[in-house]
Length: 156
Image (cartoon, rainbow, N blue to C red; front, side, top):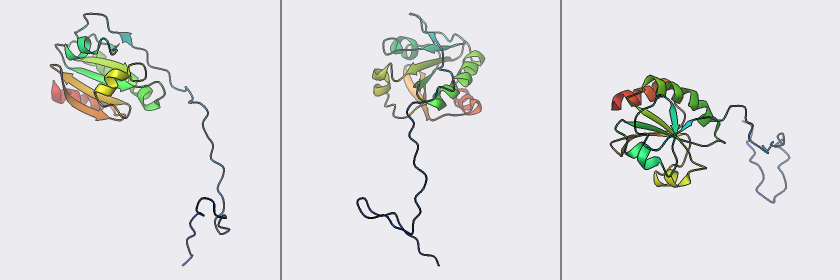
């Protein structure tokens, strides 16, 4: 049996039996290989599913999401989050497919930290479904369109 050698403790001489690996590359910036999602700002009085993803802010969240007569799927996201940007085309498709029955909203957590803090958003993307002003479902992490569709179908 070959002995296993652990790396030397911090400050100790390196273990000669362990070959050093390649240096760790540090990212200096996040590559913008995926486009930043563009959404339609929610106009004052927007409470009906429009068929497009609407942008909500801390100021419009209560009016657009909590006061909506139809369920609302809210995407809590950030520009620096690649899975968040990857989800946007799926959300656009859901908004179009469920027009009139579901509002799909998007909230940028970096620009609107108040609502994200209120709802305990610790990871992105996070999807929350609201109905009648109450949160009825929550999913953390990127999901397939089919997975989100199942969540929505179960609540409609």
